[in-house]
Each structure stands twice: as structure tokens, then as C-alpha cells.
Image (tube, rainbow, N blue to C red; front, side):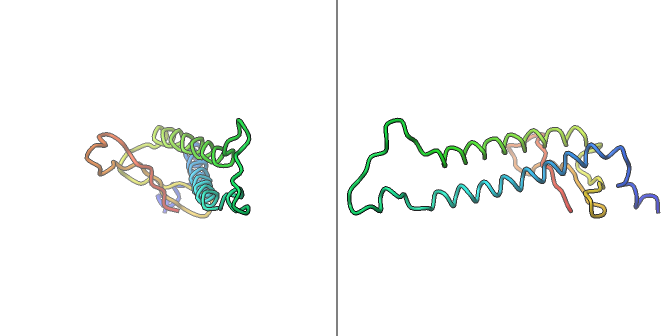
Length: 128
């Protein structure tokens, strides 16, 4: 019975916090990607106006698109950093570790990628 409660070990709290932050960052990246695709699908307001082409003001640029790209880049960098931190906190590779993500035992693990060119790289997998 004690093995079923291993996921409540207080020593796993830092790992649990990193996994929660990792899942939140992945969700934010998904939302930012959807926002980026939605923004690029919107028609430009300058092209709809009666056949006259209006040039943008000098020095202007697509601020919305650039902002969304910067947000995606920041989130991607954050996810990569969290992956490295999770790898350091995991006690073993290529096996599951039970953690408490707030609703019973969940599992997290680092598994070797199957890609031939990715020697020594691991993928974080979370089952919750």
C-alpha cells in the first residue's frame, strides 16, 4: 500500500512545480500559436477600401504579428529551459515517476527520442 502513496513524497515537490509550469507554458504556446494563425488569417483593412491603395506610414510595421512571434519565441525558450530543469530533477531516465499534480497520481518521465539524428536527447512526457 505504501508504494501507491509514493507520489505524495515531499521530496518530489520541486519536480511537481516544474511540471506544472511546463504544462502551463505548453498551453500558453498553443494559445499563442492559435492567435498567430487567427491574426494572419484576418484580411488587411487597407486592401478593402474602394480600390485605392494606401501606403503605410514611414517606419510602421506589423506590430501585432511581431508581438505574437516574440511571445511564441519567449514561450518556446521557456519550455526548453523547463525541460532542462525537469531533466535535472528526475531521478531516472526512460521510466515513469509518480507525481502529484493536484488530482491523484500522475506520471512524468524523460524518454530517449527515436529520431536517428537525436543522440542523447530526451523528450519529457507527462500523463495526467
